Amino acid sequence: MLCTTPTTTFSDPAGSPESGLGAVARRITGLLRVGGDTSAGLWKDGGPGSGMNDSLPVGSTRSSEPSVDLVMGGDAGPHELADAMRAADPRAVAKLFDLYGQHVERVLIRTIGRDHELDDMVQDVFLGAYKSGSNYQGNDVQLKAWVSRIAVFTARGYLRKRRRKWWLRSEAPNELPEQTAHDANPHMQEVLRRTYLALDQLDPDLRIPLALREFEAMELAEIAEACDCSVSTIKRRLAQARKAFERLAKKDPLLREWLEDEN
Image (cartoon, rainbow, N blue to C red; front, side):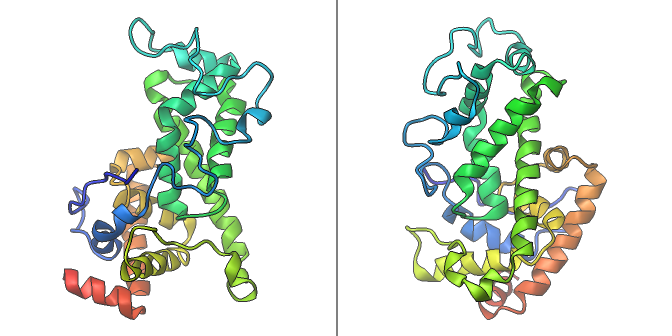
């Protein structure tokens, strides 16, 4: 399933029009496929990844199996799923996956790019939600923002670990994930690859808001909540990230050509 993120121009309400990654993002966002595109076929059976149930307590169900007690909509109250998470009901994480599995995968693939560990990271997010569910203080409507925060935390940790292993680029380049799309022409694939090479050089605290804003078109308030900081902090990080990305992109002939075309 191809991403349906609109290809409109993004700009911050109180900031300057898009530049740098924003100009490139409008043309390559569709190459980042979500759903059925992960290495282990996360969505083949409509439920969690192959090892997820083995990590859950006895009594949990696959998300493809309807839960008798957890039925969202209709007469369901605003705290039904939230209460189930707080009660450590093992079926709650399956319902949470049903509701927000694709959203989590989309957040991860936008922020880290295509990666062979993506399936495991998606599972880590929902296992983390299950383990910390007893501390959740919101209602059902706020669960998406909560899961987004866990996804960002997971992505940040992974990116920092990957940056510490920068030597793999020269020691074992074949072990690095390819930022390509099967249905794109070679030129577009190369643009995508180089875009993520540039993003790899940014600090995760700058990279994540930038990717969520430009690739996922998330609102500033949503990004701030996902990153667990204020909107003013996100605005500042976005400004820094855009300048840093544009500086890096201008050093690459192909990306520089794209930026010049947009300008």
